[in-house]
Image (cartoon, rainbow, N blue to C red; front, side, top):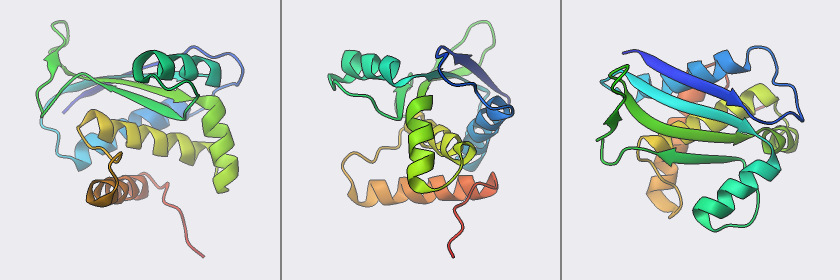
Amino acid sequence: MKVKVNITNTQRDTAIPVGTKLLVRKACIATLVEENFPDNAEVDVTFVNDEQIKEYNNQFRNIDKSTDVLSFPLGENGVYDVNPETNNKMLGDVVISIDHALAQADLFGHGLRREIGYLTVHSMLHLLGYDHVNGGMEKTVMREKEETILKKLGLAITKV
């Protein structure tokens, strides 16, 4: 399986730390490996600020506030469009607010690296059809998958 991760940084408020793009690529690949995704895949990841993500959230979800990450799946029930140039399955778009990621890393007492890794894995699971909005078992399964993948990436939260 080959995975093409297109990463764009449209915000200019915060410098993206060295190694972040590699981390995002590794998180995308680790999620697909964990989920036994059978095909070559493509995903677009964009770093934005809170103002930009608020606009997206309002435009696409009718929620007039910023958030940490948005997922825009291009497939449904395992059926994806194929990029005719690369023959990759196009999974969709991930939009991460660097402002939110910084604030949450501080709030939860872990680094920006762990937070961006988490947001990427979380969003990739959404692109693959997982949801947590209704809570219950769906949310539990998604959280367990996130932690399994983060552990494999060396980003597990250590409990003292």
